[in-house]
View 1 (cartoon, rainbow, N blue to C red):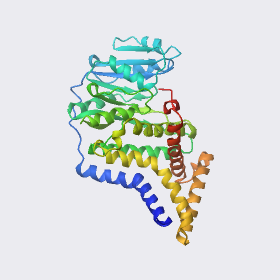
View 2 (tube, one colour; view 1 turned 30 degrees about the horizontal axis):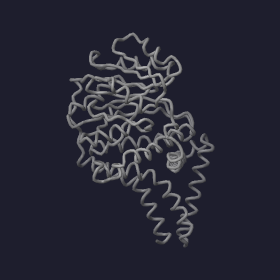
View 3 (cartoon, rainbow, N blue to C red; view 1 turned 120 degrees about the vertical axis):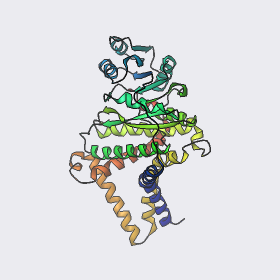
View 4 (cartoon, helix red, strand yellow; view 1 turned 135 degrees about the horizontal axis):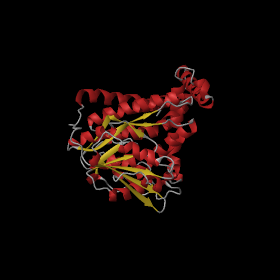
Length: 377
């Protein structure tokens, strides 16, 4: 294969992952997509599970935020699982004076995946919702999250995470990426292709829960993938809002993304049926959305090398433009405050940062336990 052909194949892979597939999903969703039947008047009994580790300072406020939801009080329970916390997390949660609150105090830190599995053995309502300590819900979030379960085909529902604007220079670019990601997830939901949920706000039918192996990083992909495999649908309720802060720095955002991407590699290992088009009911969407995003940085490196060896004025120009673009993006990461003043540079910097995380995600997942990349939940 010539260097020129290799270059264009790599560019095509990148273009499909970030533009072609989202555009196809948008077109198909508009033409063939449909929403499930929803009923927010007949609210099911629901348990909201909050996994916490060393969250004494914040857990009580989080529990009260959930209890104040616009949801029938007699149909709402909160189950806090303190995952071997070394502070007074369990005591602070138990101090909330409401009989609907239960606290499960684990003696040792077992990790979020195992903690959620233990909590699910205690849940006894038809629906179970999940959230973290850091976020807050909009007043009607829980009602909007549970309404689609009126449709028996729906097995899991994701809410929408709203992230506050970041104060670092790449925040604008990360925000753009997240808005595009939410639009893609919404289109996938309308097509029955959605295979991931927001860990900060999602729910599922308790009967469809499959125990999560200890150390699993992406519980918010494990659960919806199992729901899809059972023959049910995963929906996205965009009116169910959870609010969160942005990463404080580029490094924090990088570590968060590295953890997520390493978790994708881990899932491929733990769920080998994902790679089987005949066993994975959303193989096309999963491959286009998740797998190709992992391959994009490698394609970018090959494209850079291929343009250097292809020869001819066109490829010399393309090689130079790539070097210039990467240099500008790197400058934007090193001096984010200045980059924020230049059009498109924050987006370019974020693109490079996210793909550098994707590049490192494979060796990170092979060299260490990906669960060590993130402890707080």
